[in-house]
Amino acid sequence: MFTVIAERINMTRKRIKKEVWGRNAEFIAGEATRQAEAGATHIDINAGGDPAKEVDDMEWITRVVADAVELPLVFDSSNPEALESGLKLCNRPGTIINSITGEKDRIETILPLVSEYNTGVVCLTMDDTGMPADCDGRMRVTRDLTGALEERGIGLDRAYFDHLVRPASTNPGQARCVLDAIAATRREFPESHICLGLSNISFGLPQRNNLNRAFLAMLVAAGADGAIVDPCEKGLINTLLSSRAALGLDDYCMEYIRAQRAGRL
Image (cartoon, rainbow, N blue to C red; front, side):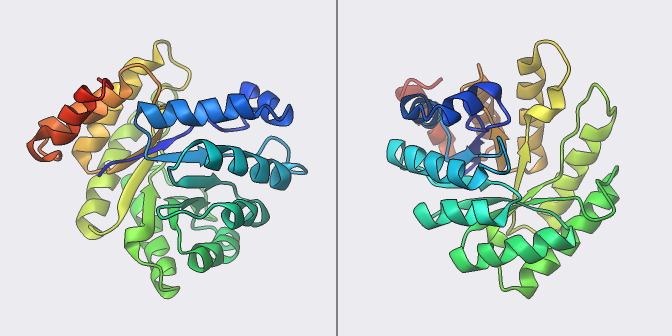
């Protein structure tokens, strides 16, 4: 199964911030429902519009989204208090915390929540030294993070590694480093998940959908089994399902066929 974390309910987006602060439940519920119908397996919630309001906003969004869809939620914050406020309201099977890094503070404050609530966790491959620029650096942090998880009895099947996609427009060659890191992680830690933020690849470029779809197919081929995406983006789920079918990752193309029968292709 490929994990599709739907990214649209994020208060860094002006429209989402406006509707959350206006407590427009119908709009936010509609965003969740559209993403679920498009093919999301998880709904990401980011309430970071204002640090002073984040806990209250996280609680409100969680209630609205949990009522609108039955999918597990992904609580997206670096604030442990905000994360726990959402987890207390809705901790379904498959819930994920987004995210930890190799930074000491993030490990010490967020991993205890992963343990207590028995969630999955997105693991960003950066640490207190910054964001690695090559595959070796990403793998160094990946190994450090696996060690931190194992020390706390958290199985690697609950880890979703994000090797940090950078824009093709400003970081030439970085996509190759990401693909190499995915393949290396899949070989070294086969029980783990690999789930990347896709849209960074096209930042700053025209016709972003072209790059997003092309790179998504590359991620699948390299060994990623998840992505943080806008599932409503034109052709994106088509590309995902087609890639998995072509690569033999979808047994007898049944996911592809079911999507066609459901009118999602």
